[in-house]
Length: 399
Image (cartoon, rainbow, N blue to C red; front, side):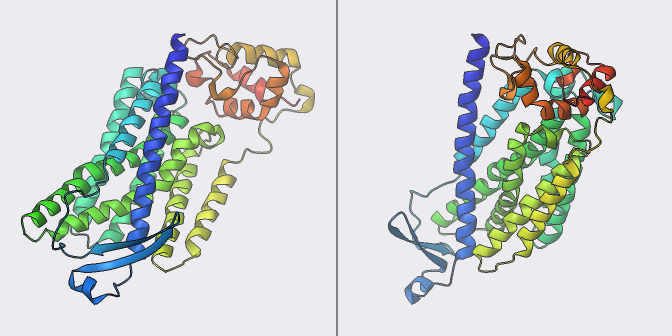
């Protein structure tokens, strides 16, 4: 019952996280679209009032007229719409999920026993937890310093974009060396998501509050507040698609368990950013099909990199193990968790829905079993001490 309660709470928390993320990302994408779709106001009266641009739209049976002011409007209403609670709720619920799913059992989910770095492979659970927290905090600090040092006045944002892209390549590589593959993908996405939420908390909202305060006092707002807010908001929109991909990647072990998982991750991050760039430019009236074309090319390259080798396993059919031997290995190393009634205390149901209670069910997941065993992602943390000979038996499985 305790495992069931934890799973149900996990479900509700994940639901909250998805709802908040949809609301935040949807609103963010909308405002980027709105900002890029503005046209010069046609009415002289609007231009005199300081309207910078306007957009007419139809949606849900109604017509909308959005206007953006370049300077402070003559009268600022008290019921301004603010966008921040959705961002904070997304990050807080996501971090809570990370604590429940990963940090409660770090030796199982975070420590990478197959790391090429001996110190990472031999970390204790509490050390992995501290490293994960430092990874998130360090990602934000480095990103924030890049913004402050390279383009403090928003005059070198192109160079800053290149620097942030390089930073994400480094983050992807380091994460896959220090943590298990699934955790590495999640943590890389969390680095971007943390930067997105921190941008809202430390820069966008404070800058907007200072602008509103100055306008209500009859003073001219500092234009840098608006420019900084726009800079960080633009960064957030390019992070969006890669973050969503990395957050759902834990369902697809062929991505995160590959020996070049960091490269696969980088290709997806760049593809997501390029595809987002297409929509940003399209809303500004500048359609550039080269961006999604290159993005799709990177996705196809990721498909090629992550594809299993046709010769994986390498055993001749005559050396293939029989069903009894395979069943014995799988029962010893897999069904502790992957069963309808798992023996592992941390599960009330088989992880990812994979139950190996019958040979037919095992056969139905043959490809997944071979792939995760060959990559050494499973058993998690090699908790059952699967030997190399036993991995070879799974690799030689021809049936």
